[in-house]
Length: 431
Image 1 (cartoon, one colour):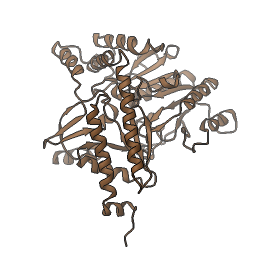
Image 2 (spheres, rainbow, N blue to C red; image 1 turned 30 degrees about the vertical axis):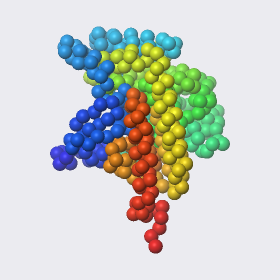
Image 3 (cartoon, helix red, strand yellow; image 1 turned 30 degrees about the horizontal axis):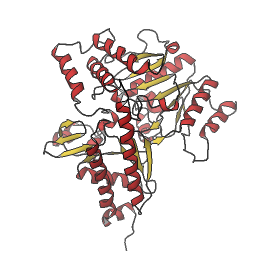
Image 4 (cartoon, rainbow, N blue to C red; image 1 turned 180 degrees about the vertical axis):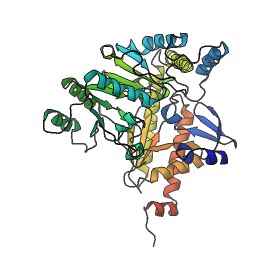
């Protein structure tokens, strides 16, 4: 791996946690150059909901390449884009009666967020955006301004303005309604809160620590936005595309955001693709006002259309996600209940789950190390990386899912029985 250390920037991150060279992947299994196999509970940070090299999607991609389909088209009309729009409307938008226009942005999630914030400001003529504590929306300047974690904010090198942070659901404790606080500021002309153009929110904060917003809280937030003329933006980049059990994470709450951002698993094959959905009356862009060379990734249109047609034509996948989610929740609760050295909190929804350890934030990192040695790829999240975060492919085989959860249990046991590690973590003291 010397070539990576010699030439690649220090900014690289995941490879430090998983120091091997991967050569092959299939669904939820990875293989490295030494022949070792790993179960994947990372799934490209949520970009591979349908697994690695999904054969149903691969066949369509190979067919498209073989016939010399148009790969790059800026924002011109292509048959691949046409099919994606038709399938997306037929399988997703129309059944939910969502009257959205579709904007293809640059290929990364952060560009979709940038476009959404820019559009909200253009429509309302206001500059302030409300985001929430522990929110993550990207690392380009506009989106990192709406991101809470100082690790990302400090790297900007310039003031991050025009965003006001409000406490997320549960941030101030179970008995405090954070939206009452937000509403009080909106109603008080002396609060110092400039009327926002929009509110941007994740229904489940993935990078922020798998914090799950309450259904009524989301409904109240929608009402609050309507009452004060603020646009509601739901960032569904990580927890959309089926991760919570429905295609959109906000479906369970019955809300209809003004703007939605999608990326990560939208292409369904790990290919770069992002879009912004906006209510039709909000499509106030002038031609070319927000553009980008790679907003026409036709290969991604092919795999995205096939995934939606194949997996979202009925409720089979949705049922499987919820069943597997219950399995994960039950197993994680059993792990938490079995551990007496520290308190672990189980949190999540669908197939995004976390095991949080507030009293010993470094424990989760030790678990990822132990799990990697045992053949499992899993990451941490949260302000202090104190949450062990579960993001397996939605298509993972149940036996493999159980095997991965067994490795997690074994890893906690091994770490908490290692006296040297326990001393390092401060969980036991040296005599």
